[in-house]
Image (cartoon, rainbow, N blue to C red; front, side, top):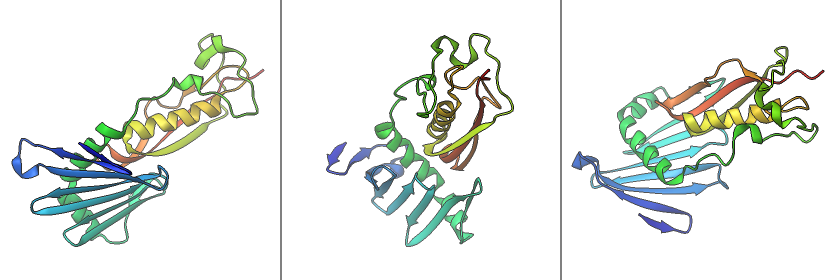
Length: 205
């Protein structure tokens, strides 16, 4: 691996010699996305990903595929984009898997500790997520969503956002979840995803 001012390059081997190559990864837009370029002896693939708005572009062999998130679905103006995406699906998975190995970070803190909207005081730390028998307020659904390079990243982000808004004076974090699993729309397998989840706060007397 070699580093530059705004990114790095990874030279990798593969059990299939035709798939080894060099992957350049650059950040752009103050952390809103990444640019990845895969070079092999006979081809160049480039992916531009904007996680802020859920926008994905693939450039390959003078062909381009463009997708974006709309109403919880990935859409495109050109149906041929799906064929292009399908052709290079395994290469894109390889690119983002390598990129995540070098760029992803573990959560900084437990979800329950990220409390506070600024207008409430989390005054009962012994009652984390209703752990002391605090009743849940099922009349108030709090739903948030996030976009990420991988399903695990987007889901954790969505849970973090919901947890933050669940906090109130009764307890820290959400008292219960509508489902323990996020509702996700991913472009390729578990990559390039928008995930949402719904939580319920503790009831405040």
